[in-house]
Length: 253
Image (tube, rainbow, N blue to C red; front, top):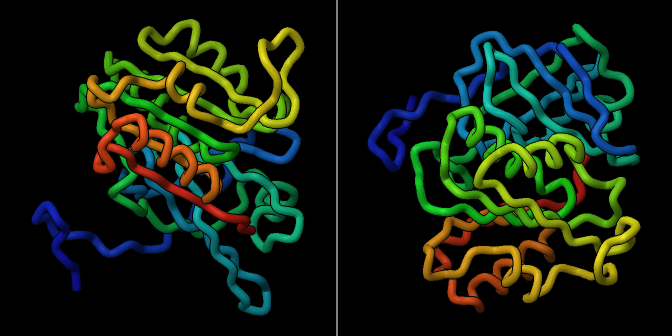
């Protein structure tokens, strides 16, 4: 039986759909974007995720959740998968899964950590590592909708080779009016970078974020420790907790 949502609408039960690989893009030495054809996909909001399920010949099943990396286009969706060496799902998706092969997907999932294209308040995105994926969906949705909402992205990564969507982010920072991108490198910075590698701190958030009096919407995504640190920094700067939305993750397959 369908249940009403907070907005009074009736929620449609999620069903598993067969998706097939249409395209693969290499993002980093350990991460790939998979573009999937999903007939009947109902659409999604930037920031939502889906479940991917694999079924072995003996009937064993394994499922994992992955953030959607871009707006839907003609029943095509994109997710970026980082390979976990001892995982059950990511090694298959990044090393075995071939064009035209099926997997099952279910979604979209989540309604809290989302950005809607009709919103006009400034947006601060803070990503740690692969936590940039749902935030990139917001960046892409902003461009696709022709939105003029000002965006700022602070992206913390270990080294320059760990940056997801590196070329696209450079292009968008140059061409997408109202989008600013700043990086924090924790282990190795690129040649000519000012300062030393460090973990994200108050100075980074203060310099590259929005001041609280502009009432920005803040989205923070990454490993649990990173998310807790950034959320505390934002609240300490005066951002109300209701405007600081977080999504955290741990090691998965």
